[in-house]
Length: 44
Image 1 (cartoon, rainbow, N blue to C red):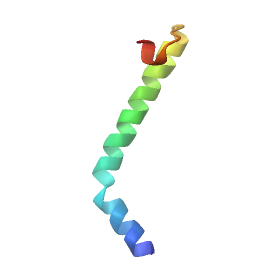
Image 2: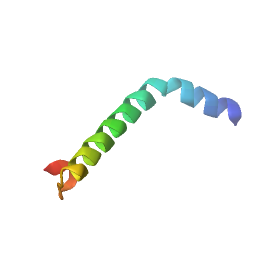
Image 3: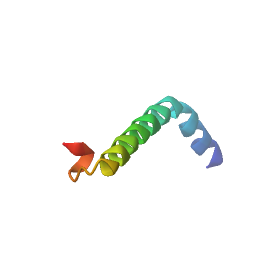
């Protein structure tokens, strides 16, 4: 079981990094919009 988890993590590490970067970016945008008083998601 542990080897399968490690293999899966190694295989998708690039995807995980990209996904984490996108999530962090969207969280930053949402936080900036919140500070600017935007009510709609991401200020749209």
